[in-house]
Length: 214
Image 1: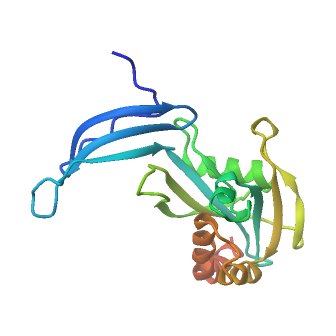
Image 2 (image 1 turned 90 degrees about the horizontal axis):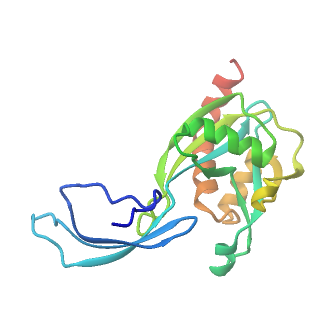
């Protein structure tokens, strides 16, 4: 029997999940599975047979660098092919983010991504929460964080990214109030940055009190 790719493990057993078949259709950088199954309805009866494509991306991290002394945030801009395919502008405004390495601690990964993509190293990190991004077709589970970071004056803070991965991230420092305004105008159009900024807008007063005393 051919071994399954490590990035395409079988779906875990669950009382609501009634599997019938599970085929690995693609095992490139991210695996794609074709899963035929039924699920148990609320009355206990099985659903009709369903066949879903399951994209296996695994777990990732997002970190929003925040300077509580000057009330600034650091965001990045980078080219995103899927955004272009969706009819959006391909240069997306985002938070530093990335995927977990095997066995890597999520907070450590968030700190690593912030350093690689912005050049800034937060000295304090707090969790925001864990959220699914595409629960209708992908297993990606993201760990969100906010990090206390000393940030420079607003403006373009240079280009970063891993050359080996063909990555270029343009780092932009801006006042948190301006970031909130861009979000309200729907100019920040990806869920990770939007959620992190919404969380910060609610929690900034508390962070400023706690972080500027620490």
